[in-house]
Image (cartoon, rainbow, N blue to C red; front, side, top):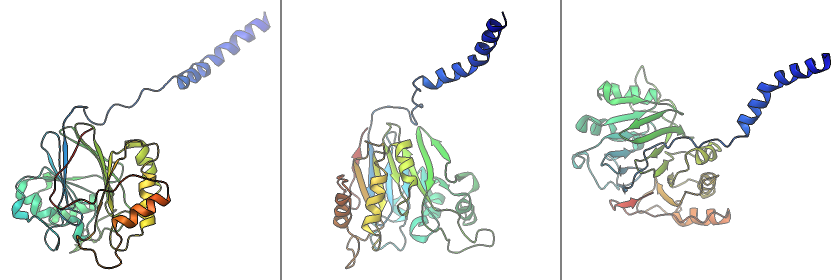
Length: 283
């Protein structure tokens, strides 16, 4: 009797553990889609340096790094911009925050930025309700579009600094998933970081807009691309930014990056985009 009783007690004690083991053995359901799956086309336009305009399936307009005034390669002026729904400056540097304040004031666009950069933008005259703060790991949903803030290995000073915002916090990159599920990773000015392998696996971007300044090491850029292929078969589109249309002698070029990628066994073609040309993407 004691043996049988002990056996029953042991079985009762083991039951929760066995149930937990069975739970983890079950196939896990995939997480819900970040955006409502639907058809349609996303368009991308480059206006020089790191300024891009992305138009969503339903016509929402997102500006990345709207560097216009002082950009020798700019193909638009602030006067040309009549609509903007969201502005995503990667950091506080003048060639990235650019004309964010002027465009937001003119169009009523929301600005998504780090807490410190968002405060500085408000201090420059953008109404508080238009500025939404989100640091790394934050997510914003706007009309079926999901924007995620990720890390960027870069600085984020502001000009002019203020007494309350002498520095604009952490630099950022953005992962944007549109209504049709098409996803783009905008690196900001980041160097390669192992974090990019995590974002590749988490968000599986279809496209990457990567930093390619004059002195950016092609090997570093190639490693960024390779990291973004980690458990991510979707990455098929690459576009550079932070480069001149007529680069100075010795500047890093698309050909340099493509060669470095080939040396790592990565064979994704780079689109050397033309200013103001419309590029269309579907999922």
